[in-house]
Structure formats: structure tokens, C-alpha cells
Image (cartoon, rainbow, N blue to C red):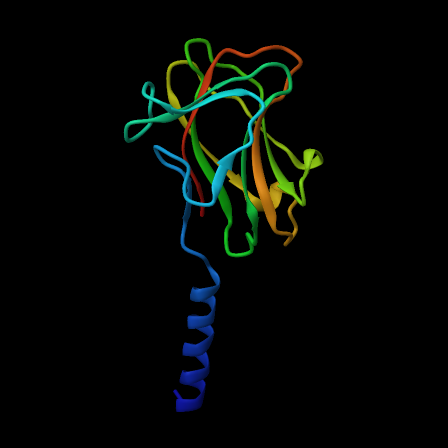
Length: 163
């Protein structure tokens, strides 16, 4: 291989590797620095049980259309491919939840992803960033919203990250 070609290929591989961002924790036993709860559902950010890993999860008591709302200063998601979290449906499960990105203070409700947790168990959820409709825009929050007009049984969320 010619030296110039080898250098060009190495530079391209290095550029691709640095374009992908390392996973960023949003919640793991507590909200990561820079994240805050602006929820209008009743939430406990330090719920002891059940917890997927560690010592705490987020318990969410969601009235009709209310949400767990995690806010952050505008952040570019171009290096991330998925929003990943674990959800537990509590004793009954079957809650209809909508995962929604917030851009410029506006929820992109036309691009929600539906999640239905199972009773008594933790389920991993991986939401492709592209499905949230952010299209290269900086997000300033994430919702996990009660997608129904009825109050829901308590559900739990843990280990939230951007990957």
C-alpha cells in the first residue's frame, strides 16, 4: 500500500471513530450532572425497589397525559444512535407510554415511540434517535409520557443513557 493512501485511510478511520460519542448516562441511581426533573407526573428519583441495577430507580405515578420529563441544556445528539433505558410495569404492567424528545422547549409529539412495560419484570428499551424526529437538532429534554387519558399504575424507569 502506498504511504499516502495508508495515511489517508488511517485519518478517515480516526475521524469516524471520534465522530461517535461515548455513551452518556442520563440516570443511574440519580440524575447525571446537567439533567434535572421538570416532570409533571408524580416521580421519585430515589425509589429503592424495584431497581434494575444499583440502589434506586425512578418511580412514576402518571395521571392522564402527565410525564416524566428530564431536562438538559440544548445538546447535540449527532454522535448518538439510541436512547436506552429499562422499564418495569409494576404489579399490573401494560401501561401505554410515549417516548418523546423536546427541542427548543417544544415536545416533538408527532414523532413519539410507544412503549408498553410488562408486569413484574424489567425490559430494556432501545429507541433509535432518528425515530424521535430530532433531525440533527439539539434536544433539551426527554419525556416518558402517559399516552392515555387515564391514570396509570406506577411504573419504574432505570439506567437511562444515550448511546
